[in-house]
Length: 121
Image: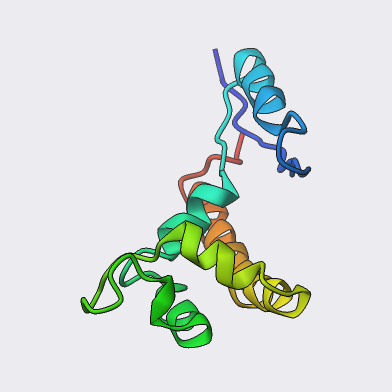
């Protein structure tokens, strides 16, 4: 039996607690699914050496690091959140810096899936 490997790109958005994960779990039970979780991608990009790391430290300062006196210390998400959510302007700046990098990572993963002929019958 020939398997159809075409795929649909579906974005699920919503605020915290709106049911995004529940919807994904339901879809995964119905059909084979590749789920790209943008929060997980964003967190990975914030790891030392990741595409967002230096940009965020430069923008928000070493105070966002778990140990601001240690080179290459991981970003503390609670500290970053406190700094970035302090004002509407800083929140927007966080999004301006990180969203394009997350989008680029998602696009790269989709390209990899296509290259593996995931979307070809």
